[in-house]
Image (cartoon, rainbow, N blue to C red; front, side, top):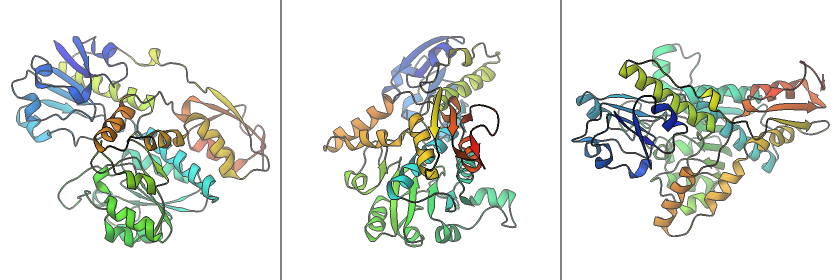
Length: 392
């Protein structure tokens, strides 16, 4: 059995070799000829899976190692009886850590504390739930907006709030919605000029969902008027192309890599592999755990005595993931639009290994109990017995 895998899926060759003959290809360059005699296709979001790719092929299973599925023509897959799956939740923790790094950088750069602020989270699925948990660990109040979940779980409105209230009350607004092009829960263009005009003046706006959720022209106007004081964009209208004027206007701009932690990518591979095994009626014969490399920062020390909380947290977080490096690399993009799009793709394709906070143990000195709880709340382990080197 021939299996075609995206080369950007860590350990995919080792995993799928237990099922058949594996061909590893650049996901964006997979052609109909490549999949003509394949039965299993394992991809990421750069591969457009549609009629033109699959017609005449032997493909009977398609798995995407991503949480999003807008690159797949699901009605066509189902019409042809092709089993498909996604890796929902595989990189949710990675995205939440991206938010933590971005917010701590902004807090230190602009001199404010996150504790006591209100964060509005639009879309409370696998990612949004983790963002809420980390925000609360950072001492923030979270307002949640998720109309599908409110209809299903919260008809009394005790958990989820209307978007208008979220916009009016939130110091920070962050999007974690799927790309939905029609219907009552349409998300394309939901952050338009009218929505941005309804935001609390001077707020922070973050889009780490999908580019078309946010209208770039409207954001430029909101930044110019200071309705939005600071913006963080990981996703862009027209990807892999993006507007250089918008990048110049935001505080942090990155090339759609919020979910690109090594653990997130590996779990995408794991989830697709296990679904393929279930489809084929075989037991999984491969495990990722023995192959996981040692983290580059297994342990670090932070002396928090006499320092603002944000500075200690940023010192810890940036030692593991410093969002400024991703921002710096994107700002080095060439001016020509076609070259800029290729550069964006290359940054994603050649993204370096980024490990998650759970791989690092922190030795805190002179820390308050609140800081110690925050450090563990955002995902790090603490060295020593509970309460060691922590003041009241």
